[in-house]
Image 1 (cartoon, rainbow, N blue to C red):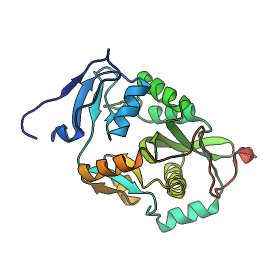
Image 2: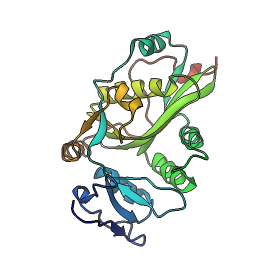
Image 3: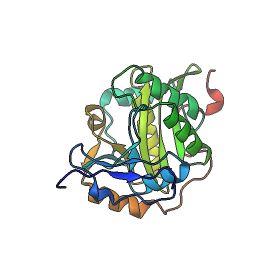
Image 4: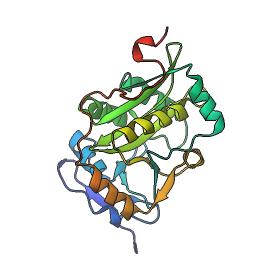
Length: 246
């Protein structure tokens, strides 16, 4: 777009509308608005329009919708030969919504002290509220009773918007990503949103979609019925939760 215009969201009107995501800046790519708050109602409305918050804890809240958008087709995850062997070994357990708070804390700790840290206490508290309301979910990877990897994100209808992941052992976040994609595919979720591309995501099969195409899929998916309450796997996965730590 020509010129620089970042829209201001009034924090006193949490039910206020977001500007059209297509009005986001080209540089920095996807910056749309600032201000507002992280109330559950505003966050749900943001994600339903393909918008997400991303900012440093000492800054105003910034809202983004980049173009292109990096996503996974849930039915077309790339699994390398080495990762296939790791998955097949099944010396781990995977769970859904078993320990959301630990997952998000680990995701924040990975970035502790790094320039551009964004997952501050305010963000963690906001996503914990969304989790309690059934809109934010985690996937955990365990080995010998210890949490070794995972990720979390936001679900609106049949769209899953990935937010952050962590690994404490090799390939643990990849294990989480693969099993989440398989379950989402079984539930009829077309995409797993990765937001912004990286070598790690592309190596696992992520693709870039034009923002307009991404937003069209979002609109088609957010009103479709999806599992309610805490999520649980209904596909066969390594080690059920009751076997964790055995």
